[in-house]
Image 1: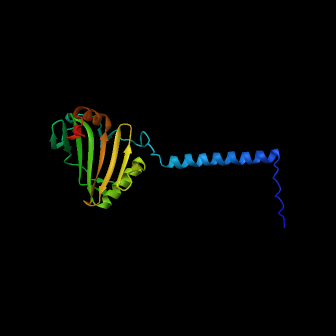
Image 2: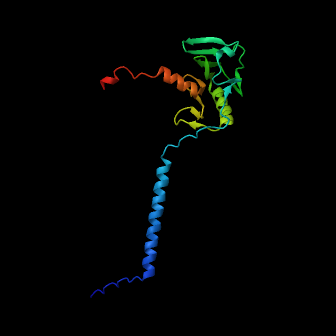
Image 3: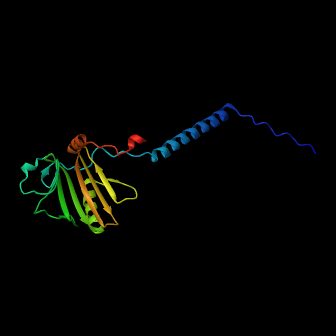
Length: 194
């Protein structure tokens, strides 16, 4: 028995255009998908500021000279960098009870606040207060650390589960930059040998 040859497909001009159009759409969809997937893996830059960026802390404006703040008690003297506490400090922030609030000054200019706390519940209450005021912040994956990056102020909250303690840092960037410029950071010993 002889086999009949298969009929040759004859496409008219409209069918050729349809195949070309389908191919073009398929390529366009593939490009969009590749760009979308690639965009998902790019690190998103934080916004240049966050809502309610603070211009100070508890009534003290950033950059204020320590001489204008009577009643502060010196707790650590590091030369150009000194840390103070207020003897009558309110140690409750929202529902969180904190251990201590320390005010940092570099060359007598207010630039840093450290809020120390103990216990997971105090950390959770403090984080709730901060997110309610400043928004969600950037979460560092795998850690109990959140950060808010502002134009002049950075705020960070971190909790160490092993030690069952955490802290909140407020850093005034203009004075931090001056401090870094003056103190610099030396490379570790031996790096010239590499």
